[in-house]
Amino acid sequence: MDKLRDILNRIDGKGYKAYKDLRGKYRFNDFTLHIDHVQGDPFAAPSKIRLEVPKSKTILREDWESTPSRKVRVEDTIARSVASAIRHQETQAGGSGKSGVITIDRPAQEVLQRTAVELTANAVIICLSIGLPARGRKVLGKQAKKMLFTIIPQVLNDSIFSLEDDTVVEAIELCDQQDAIREFMKGNNLVAFIAEGSILPRESGISDRPLRSDDVVAFVTPASLSISIPVPHKKEPIQGMGIQKGITLIVGGGYHGKSTLLEAIERGIYDHISGDGREFVLTDPNAMKVRAEDGRKITSVDISPFIQNLPFGKATTQFTSEDASGSTSQAATIIESLEAGASALLIDEDTSATNFMIRDERMQQLVSKDKEPITPFIDKVKQLYEEHEVSTLLVMGGSGDYFDVADTVILMDQYRPFDVTSEAKDIARNSISNRKREGGERFGDVQSRKPQASSLDSRKGKRSKVAARGLHTIQYGTTDIKIDFVEQVTDASQTRAIAEILHFVEKKKWLGLLSVSDLLERIETQLNEKGLASFTDFPNQHPGDLARPRMLELASALNRLRTLAIRQ
Image (cartoon, rainbow, N blue to C red):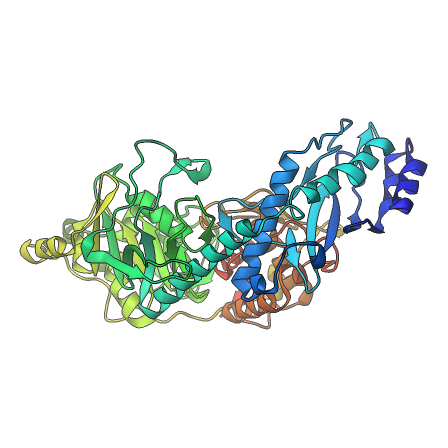
């Protein structure tokens, strides 16, 4: 502490680069301050610091880290408490640029593994970004002392040192219950579960918080789909709707909640915090939302299960396009998802290519099959489940032909679900349809692809340039990776992590040696064994603001790389 104070007194009023002298490690009474990176000027990205708090000075208990998911939940709880404490502090010190700013990578509604807080064997590491105070480009030493000696210790006092047992225990008990439900789902062939009373609508299109309104309809489970799941820390089991593996249709009129239900299910791959309304909306963690994506890059994907016999003899077993259509992009995304390990597909007809989803009887009569390259999804969805054990949850409001292939049909009526499977099957049996199946006898195999080393080139001029630009864009060298339509990326910190992992893969020269599936397996193993920070340049310093992505989203980013080169 004394050394840090002396440095700040010495550099007060000097040029901003004098702050570089602060880099190092400083012992405070209750924690150790690590200043890992100092920004070059007050307008640059904030400086990076770590606060190392001995566990002996906290209420943390060993059994709170007895499982990986519990450990993540405790880290998440601490991160939320620090974010709350920062929010209640006067962190603006005045001055230029980012002077006085203090931030942590703040969690939202989902619980994600993050680098913001890490529990080690003996300590809690808290990573913050701070704007060192300056006037113009002159050091404001007095304000910096206030930030480092008063505000930051107060943030710790108001967060980790004030953390109450009940807060942590509540979070851990919810974690245990969510884990128990996921285990039950595995053992009972469920692809999704929505608890009775869940609140599915969100506050707005740009807010993921629950809608608070007297008009909100809490989820009510149809009796025929109701299941009970015993969970720890509760005397009574949790009741709700279980969606079995297979093919499930969600039907109903417009504005009756079809897409709202699907959106809740697609976010159910993540656990949610207490009070979110979707705490017990849980989905197979390998379920993938797919959609049409006009204009995306496709590189050497075997889309022949869906598209064959293109004009001029263009092959579809190694299909490449710089500007894919809606149907070809959706076909490619499904095949890429299977390659990356998806076990369920989530599809909304509103964001799908119509000619990919269905070709009705009249169109079959007018345009014969030998003139139509596309085999619609309706004729492949059952084969997909029977051959590859990949389920489909599909929002469909415009085609009853899907009744023939569905295992379960759920009708949404004024935001309430009804099991109408029997009625839908009766309609299918009793109505006259001469629509011909076009899918052949098999779905087809998923070909292995090997990305080539030349695919990843982070050079921009003489330096590497890899950076996430918000939630949907990664700058990689001289090209951008656009993931606007990869809808299950929910946090910009996941996008940053994807960028770091791709850069790590480039530096380790893993491409050219491994297939896509083997590459993802190696990355997942390292994530499990060494953590997110192991993919950064300085894993023993501030690891950046990263949150763990799924391998499905990582593969999606790789597949949208316009410099991707593939060997099958």
